Amino acid sequence: MSDTSNIAAQMAKKEGLQHSFEMDDGKAITLETGKLANQADGSVVVKMGNTMLLATIVSNKEAREGMDFLPLTVDYKEKYAAAGKFPGGFFKREARPSEYEILISRLVDRALRPLFPDDYHSETQVLISLISADKDTMPDSLACLAASAAIQTSDIPFETPVSEVRVARINGQLTINPYISELDNADLNILVAATPDNITMVEGEMSECSEDEMIEALQFAHDEEFYKQVRDATYDKFYEVAKSAKVTKSGRKEKFKEVEEEFLESLDDETREEKEGLARKYLDDVQTEAVRNMIIFDKVRLDGRGPEDIRPIWTELNYLPNTHGSAIFTRGETQSLTTVTLGTKLDEQTIDGAIIGGTEDFLLHYNFPPFCTGEAKPMRGTSRREVGHGNLAHRALKQVIPGNVQV
Image 1 (cartoon, one colour):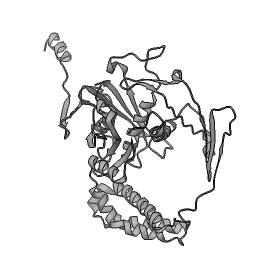
Image 2 (cartoon, helix red, strand yellow; image 1 turned 60 degrees about the vertical axis):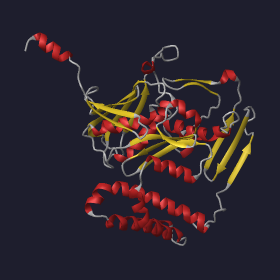
Image 3 (tube, one colour; image 1 turned 30 degrees about the horizontal axis):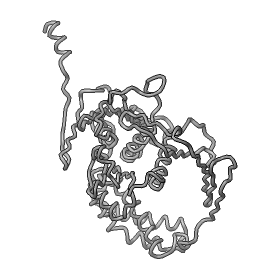
Image 4 (tube, one colour; image 1 turned 90 degrees about the vertical axis):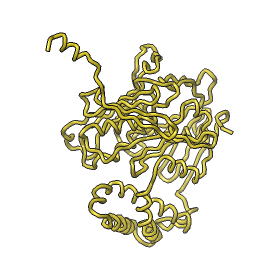
């Protein structure tokens, strides 16, 4: 082959392997691998509309010495160029992740982490980048799909594919992965992560949603046949153990364990090998449900306390003299010191994201310093846990803040 032919071959467009599918409403999603980031252990580009995400995974070949947990890092990053925008600020460069990016990273982490083997301790990094942004297609509901697909293209051990979808109720109708323009009319907006057999994570918000409506939304996103099998076999047994108030805590724990092992031993070898991890997760869920229902219906807690017998609570208002408002709340050993500050239009937060923009006039910041749990460890700025827990409280309270209430 001539030098010219070699150059032409090298410059030829590289075609990746693609797979496309349509959702019930006709929205098409395409997955592509083999075109970008080929030095990663696995990489996939997910596209819906003109929104494109590149997900990569790299894992060290050797486990980290002395590690007894999975050192997994998941980072979601939005490139401003994806939307044809410049980053805000003096340096005009993407720097530390925004709270929105941190929240998406946490959602993907929570879906992926349980599906790695319990004894997998190699340093593992999942990176998800928004590389093209459709102004009407939310990228967050595609991030987990992209990450899971990237893992599937690698040789890294992983139990089963997992994905996330957004379920929104718009004008009374449930919709999967709605457009951004449709979300203004949504009174239920949740992200659901699921494997073929299991719902692994749910997060979102709604305006006064009943339990039945919530269950309908979850079933709209996922089928739970195996969960039903586990529940039918173990719920009554867990309930009876929970009712044994005279049994010591350690004795009750042992009896719960016996119910779990009895169910696992009832599975044939092939099913147990394939689904033991999933079964243990479901067993834990059924046990929690049985204990909760026993407390509600039998009016007694595991330790014999009645439903109205609570840990000591005390509160104090206006503890800090120079804040606009302050309060202490203490229940047992859990304590919160909270302040409120009132501002003007000039104090609004400017939201400058690749997709999400505008202003926010209600801010909720949650801080969890090491002394809260009697620990001594370095403080490296706001943690992902603080951002995530603060977001949950923010979502709950903003529904009753004047001006934010949806009618």
